[in-house]
Each structure stands twice: as structure tokens, then as C-alpha cells.
Image (cartoon, rainbow, N blue to C red; front, side, top):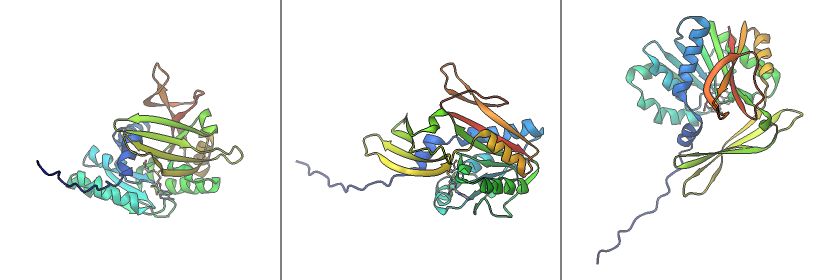
Length: 270
Ligand SMILES: C[S@@+](CC[C@H](N)C(=O)[O-])C[C@H]1O[C@@H](n2cnc3c(N)ncnc32)[C@H](O)[C@@H]1O
């Protein structure tokens, strides 16, 4: 009788950035939107992107793939996601693509950040600024560091569902993603959110990412951009499918629709 082979049970570390990417990021379509929106507003192609709050800088990595003129700067305070991007995403780029990518461990409020044609603040990261004065300092810093004719693109979310605690569950291949709004304070508009994951057949991993934000409205964001000196602002609103779901196509609007949950881009033109 053959002896049973001894196997060492090693626990594989949970790769939170990989699940995050699969659940919430779509950097390839993001860069197309950023490039095409700049072209639509300015009539020419952009070259330099600055991805503020870049985390693992997946948008920068897609930007430099758009062509040999496309250069990208990523800015984040935290070395942990930067390190992940450097070891997991940057090595997948060609030599030329890597040479057009620079990552800076910096605060987005710091003076002297790299100049850009497009600054992107994605996944609602700017909601971390809870006071008007802080959000305006951020927008002012963006204006100072945009090239002439440059645009700031900041995504936003809201809807009646965000006015109370709620949890959305999305099943992906091999795992489940949870977007958990823990609370909402109508006096301050502050709200806390968590991302949980459950890999099929494993224990749920709670609070893998957490956010402490202020829910800003679209008119507030537009007003602050104009107050710091942006020439014009736009709201790009997502279209809907026949079944009422978001269709991933964002067009400029002057009027939105009542929704339980919406995503939109606020864009400031220098
Ligand atoms: C919600 S995550 C978004 C990451 C990435 N942009 C994405 O789309 O997945 C927010 C990121 O902003 C960074 N961050 C927060 N405050 C910052 C600041 N003042 N300056 C630079 N980065 C900041 C955090 O370290 C974190 O990586």
C-alpha cells in the first residue's frame, strides 16, 4: 500500500489588491474616457496624466499603453499600494511604457506636483476632504498644476440609498464583493464605508478596505471648482440600460435623474 504523501498546509496570504481590482476597477475603460473627454473638450489629444490618490496606479499603467506620447504620474501618500503596483503591475509594462511612468509618494495637497493635461481623482478618493477649505485647497492645487487647457476629472456617487446604512453584494467568479455603508450623518453628511470579500469556500474577510468620507453633492463640487478659478465645469452622467442599470456610458448633462444610486464625473476645465 502506498504511503500517504505528507502535505504541509500553508495558508496563502489574501491578495486584497487583486480582489479590489477585479471588483471595482476598470482602468482600461477609465483611460479611454479620460483621453476621449479631453479630446472632446479641447479638440486635441492629451499627453500627460496625473493620477491623484493613485493607490496601485492601475490607471497610470493603462495610460502609458495608449501610445508612445502618453506619460503618467501617480501620486499617493501610502507606500503599501505603491509597492504592490511596483511589484505586480509595473513589471507587466514594456521598457518604453515603464520609462513614461513615474510614481511619487506624496500628499496631493503638496505644492510642486508634476504638471499634467489631465488630473484624475478616481474611486471617490477626494471625498476624504471633509471641509470645504480642504477640498478647495485640493482643487486649487490641481488648477495650479494643470497645463493650459487641462482638465480635472473627479468621479462622484450619491443617490437616496446613500442617506442611510446599506450593503450591496455583488457575486464575481470565485468570490463575493460587499460594499457596506455603515452610517450616514445628515448633519455633517459624513459617512463610513467598508469593503468586505468572501472567497468561495472561505471565511468572509471583513473591512479589507475602509473609508471615512463626506458625501459631497454635484453642485457643491462644481461650485468649489469655479470658486478656485476653473473656467467651466461639466457633469458627465451615466446612461441606463432598458432594465434600469448603469450602462457605463457617460455623457454631459445639465439635468440628472432621481436614482437610488448613481455615479457621475465632475470635470473642471482650466
Ligand atoms: C479609495 S483609495 C483609491 C485608490 C485608487 N485611486 C483606485 O481607484 O482604486 C484612496 C487612496 O488615496 C490615498 N490618499 C488618501 N489621502 C491622500 C492624500 N492626501 N494624498 C495622496 N494620497 C492620498 C490613499 O493612500 C489610498 O491609496
